[in-house]
Image (cartoon, rainbow, N blue to C red):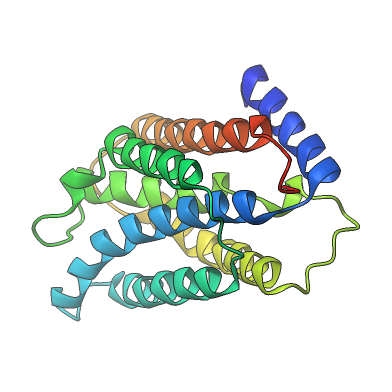
Length: 212
């Protein structure tokens, strides 16, 4: 992780320790995660038209419905902000999410074992590996609120799905060298990490009058 990214995460940890998770912060976190999961679900929806005998079908099918379920659960547990500037900032970041990840190229055609599908797997893996809020929160913060319970469930589910993703990234035969595979995976992780750090920087620079 780059030094700047580490500094942003340290700043965010300090901010959460000092200010907790008020409505503005919860709203920014939820809208970002819903943007990520909405993007992923839009791509995964294609699998519902995929031939059933394709090996990764079951994993992708389950992931699609889990993304929609967890996104809804988080929304219901969120204390929503009344500040319109929070929604403007969230919209701008979600536009950057679609632009920087190049997600639109994964929206057409069938999934098949090719370079494009491998790039999608690497992107999906990056979402789950890089976007982690719980390690940034104070260890004494109770996780039994609706918002934090939903956030915890999302990150636990991500941890379970990562294991299958790693196997697919390792074993899928698409004619790429190990070095080329690693370049794709690390490239997607860098893009997602930068977007996540942008969110953290914006949240931790925000005025704290509302308590978070």
